[in-house]
Image 1 (cartoon, rainbow, N blue to C red):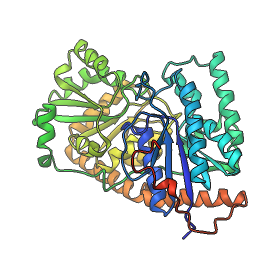
Image 2 (image 1 turned 60 degrees about the horizontal axis):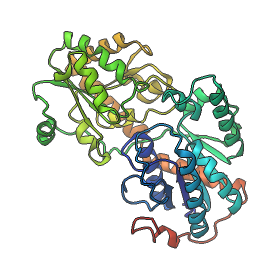
Image 3 (image 1 turned 90 degrees about the horizontal axis):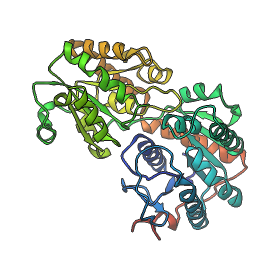
Image 4 (image 1 turned 180 degrees about the vertical axis):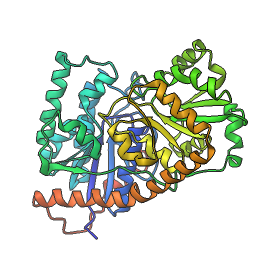
Amino acid sequence: MTTAKRVLMVAPTPYFSDRGCHVQIYEVARSQQLQGNHVAIVTYHLGNDPGHIPIYRIPQIPWYHKRSAGPSWHKFYLDLLLLGRTLQIARRYRPHLLHAHLHEGAAIALPVARLLNVPLVLDLQGSMAGEMVNHKFIREGGRLYRLAELTERTIIRHVDAMLMWSYIRESLQRRFDFPPDRVFEVDYGVDPERFRPYGKEDLQDLYDELGLPRERQVVVYLGVLSAYQGVDLLLDVVPRILASCPDTHFLLMGYPDEEQYQAQAHALGIADHVTLPGRIAYQQAARYLALGDVAVSAKLTSMEGNGKLLNYMACGLPTVAFDLPGNVATLGEAGCYAPVGDGLALAERIVTLLRDPLERERRGQELRRRCEDRYSWHAIGAQINAMYDTVLAQRGIVISSPSGHSAARDSSSGGRN
């Protein structure tokens, strides 16, 4: 077993807000605690505390309440505050390395890492410029886009290591020149004990809460509600699915813009077959997913991860998605695929599964087994810990004593000290 390390994570986001990016941050941090390392997170003022991991936050900003995904002009001053808070905590915590989530986190952590002379690891969930385009914050090919890409390249050149999904590397390699010795590929995971199948008979409280008709088959989605996630496209093809399978209900869970999508459902005449309950607590997500007979992800971009697929798999849900490289790499042969952007084909795949309960069961069981075999956080956490050891060795840093530290303990009151 390797020597315990102090790891300070920088998360420029309202952690924890029950969405994919935050789940990944939590699970990576938790996996390192289970490896015997000491982990703390520095983040924005907003967010819940999912437990287990010490959290340090910037001062309260009373006018900023955005917890949904996507860029914001407010982040310029939020990140300056996060830089100051990171430096303050790092001086007390004395980390052996900094683990920055997202390009933005690496930009914040870089001067702190240089000042403390410790390695900086960038946990790359996708392209910063690509995310800005997806959220219609900037225009692809424009001046701000080129500036964002230049910023990405600059950050990549200055970190000690990058941690990323293998299929994200394939997508981004064409755009950025990664130093190969600094890239560590890992398949991020899911907790198969938290996310597991439930019997429908154990979910009566959720049927009552959501008003779901028990006689209907349910198609579930859990994630960000946005156009680039394919939610608009999915709603547009619901009438076609209902024409073939009229006893079908669509449970579309997540946020933001629930009201916008409810209005779209009304305009399409499908409101009686669509439920949008909004944000679902991570701790309860598996039970809500278990209401489903089929899961769907209509995400349209391959420039970032698609972690919701892992949750679907762990819950034993047959899953329909577009045939993006990352989706195929994750789901394997048990996935059910449509050509990218082809809503009619997506609808046909959903209908095929709704009509065939034996095929649903077969695919769901196979996906659950694949999840248990390939996406265990125990094995993935060991890979990340080994990467830490490699990066520290490359810098000639030797950890010679147990690394428990008061900063990991004095945040139990909320991490605002």
